[in-house]
Amino acid sequence: MSHDGASARPRCLITGFTGMVGSHLADHLLANTDWKLYGLLRWNEDLTNVQHLMPLVNDGDRLELIYGDLNDYPSLENCLSKSAPDYVFHLAAQSYPKTSFESPIETLQTNILGTANLLEVIRKSGLGPVVHVCASSEVFGRVAAEHLPIHEDAPFHPASPYAISKVGTDLLGRFYGEAYGMCVMTTRMFTHTGPRRGDVFAESSFAKQIAMIEAELIPPVLKTGNLESMRTWSDVRDAVRAYHLLVTTSPTPGAFYNIGGTHSCTVGQMLEWLLQHSTRSDIEVVTDPERLRPIDADLQVPDTTKFREHTGWRPEISFDQTMGDLLDYWRQVVRTKSDLLVR
Image (tube, rainbow, N blue to C red; front, side):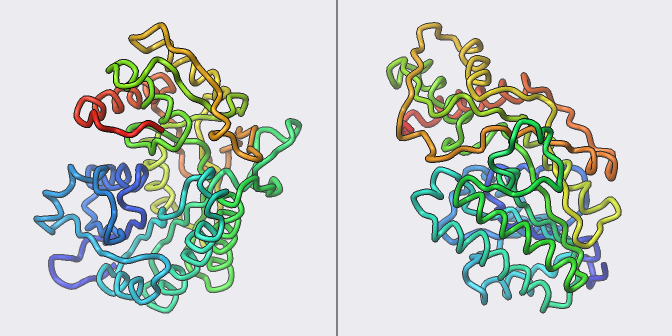
């Protein structure tokens, strides 16, 4: 890891820098390493999740922003030239399963071809960084109950265009590791949430609606989709700690891992927890047909033995703390932005 002058410390590129995971990963790395970080983002990106990091951007010593797009190959070449990374966390994606039913081509383009663009630019750069490609537990899709918990070698049965795109992402990561000897590793992170979670995801939508009801901005009616899906929940702050360990603990080209929490319950049981911790007791729950997917990945319970044995990682943040922090996050957002649109 040799770079000139004061930049001799490791350099790290994060795609999807402004998302929930990207922003928490930046927080974790800034607090726990001396790495120089580079965040890739599009020109029109919402900076809300990284607003607290802008003073570091202005200083330029620990964090720089690079504008580009996964679908714009020359911009990725420019990004690699500027950042010359020792580590790459590829988190950027069209990440909303429900949106993928409405925009399947964009989802496939960004998540499969965009990943191919990035890996090809890295390959041709000759830099040889350690690369983390973030796939998703959604690749497993509809899993029979007798196959739980889900092992890494479980068959893929994707249940959305998003999940199909992440199968492509997953296979590309492994291919570049195996075919070219690049140190590319792939993860299938199971459900992870916490502060800054986008409000298109069930638990964050519920927390946002509850916060708005508590502030008397909307009537006490909470809209839901499918409440029967089983999920294993983990905290985003545990997830980014896992990702840091992934790239620094004997990184292995072509390796792939399941990562996830230990608390499993249905979406409905998660909603019940949030309702019990609301200041309002009069909230009515109604099913909104618009929130239902044509097909759902309804049993998402991981076997994470392989990753835990390789890195020693264990989730540390409880389900109660994760959901409490998520609800408090939305209460704070509602206090400061009372003009939020209802979703």
